[in-house]
Structures are given as C-alpha cells and as structure tokens.
Image (cartoon, rainbow, N blue to C red; front, side, top):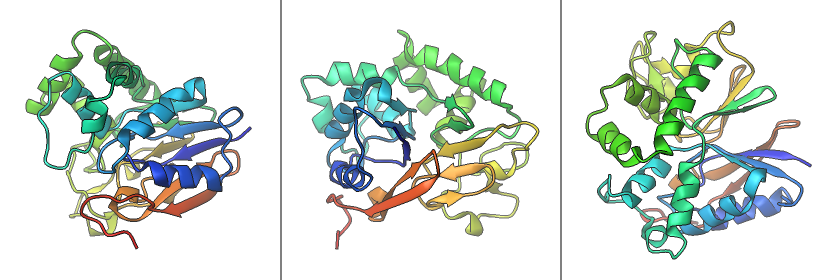
Length: 264
C-alpha cells in the first residue's frame, strides 16, 4: 500500500489517468491525497470528481478555490466567469451528489508528519490554530449558510472568517504580518517584503511538512517545511505525484487539450 500526494488536477482527467498508470496506482490498495482544485481550466472536471468521490476513504481531498467557485455556482452564489469549464458538472444527473461530496471535504487534512492545505497558512498560526480555523469554516460550508458564506466571501471578504478562508485557499505570498501580497508569479520576482507564506512560519510553531498546491508559478518544490505540488498541468506543463512513504517524485506532461494552450 502506498500513499500518493497529487497536485492540482484542474479537470485534466487524461493527464491524471496517465499519471496513475505510470505509478501503477491500485484503487483497492493505494491511497491518494489531492491538494484541491480538482476542477476547472481542463476539459473533464466531471470525470475527475466522479473518480475521486468513487475512491471513498482512500481519497483525502482538501478544497481549493476553484472547487469553492464550483460549489458557489451550483448554489447560485457565484456568477459564471469567462474561463469556467464545468458546465458538464452543473448539467450532470449526479450533480447534487457531487456538490454535496465537495462540501463535505475538509480545508485541512493532517496525518503522520504531513499537513495538507490547498494554498497557505498564516504566519501567526500554530498547527492547532490552523486546524481550529479550518474546522469552523468546514462546518459553515456544510451548513445551510454555505451559499451566504461564499457570496459574502467573494463580494466583501472582510471578516476574520473570510480572511482565514482566503489564507487557506488563496495565499501565496505575504509580509511578516501575514498581509497577503496577491502576487502570483515566481517567488524570485516578488516585490520587496513579499515572501512565500512558508518563509514566515517557524519551526517552533509548526510540525512536520506542509503539502500544498495552488501556486503554479512556484512549481514542484521540496524544502525543509513544505512540499509544493502544483507544477502547472493546466498551463501546459506537468502533473506531479509524490509517494509519501519515500517522497519519490513522478511527473507526466499534459495529455488533455486545454483551451488557450497548444499541446505538443
């Protein structure tokens, strides 16, 4: 039995299938950790959702910003965006079941020496603080208030709860106080005083390794504290899997046709 952490799939199901075949993934034996953003950009979000949901307890999935956008669309709390690519999900006969499955996913998952979130952590958080913030938000997303939370979050993200959600699903860079820089490029090109969020967390406040995705311009990266897995699949690059037992890395190039990209 092996556990594989996989970066942002973004609806690129053919690429995911190629990666799973390359690592000889056995759904009856192996487990998978998915860092969120299962949907959007790529052409087959419905297939990705059905596959992940079908794995049951063998799939650990945290919610990403695109997953939340899909939930918001389904609940009438979000308007369509120009590059949305999940009309197939919204029209599917099992749409409600899949949206409910997404709403039951956590924002933070921890086991052994690893903690997984989609995007980032606030410099002031300890593990206990981050877990508590995530649990509170998860309860809201699973409640009758989900649509209101998402509507308010995107339209007026001012409350402490909204800021915690933004940290977990959007954060890339910030200053020492934890104020987000909203910079999306590679960290080497960030403005002065704007560092990757993980450069602000201390060994004393955090435990083990944080697994995350979301930041395609960062790419695959392993440092003392983090394992970054968004290697830009939906932007014409690779999809990455890391076997957590020994951190063996496997990457496959994009196999899907993504609008705006030319696959070689």
